[in-house]
Length: 133
Image (cartoon, rainbow, N blue to C red; front, side):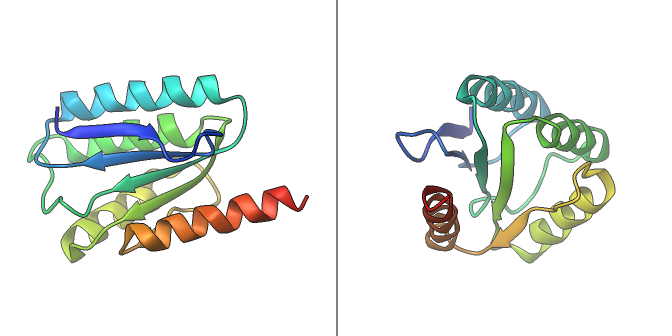
């Protein structure tokens, strides 16, 4: 499968999903189930980082239905605290931004950043703020 999913920090405060190459919607749904399982086991707020830097296109059929399902299922999880999307391709950025505007069930939309360093900085800032109470 063209994806890696894992915890960023030992305390399980951030989950990283890296798309490494072209994938299918079946693989995306499998990844969604894996993300939901990890969120279920966390027992606290978790930031989700999607690393889409290697992506320049999506599977051609089923974008709308699949994105609606993925965004609403993950977005409604009680342990999800923030979504960060690391995107460098302008077309991918536009598609994801549109999908979140259409299907996002939350008041807060994801943050778009262009580097993993920026994503990690945001997560570190969140961790620092949480540690201060």
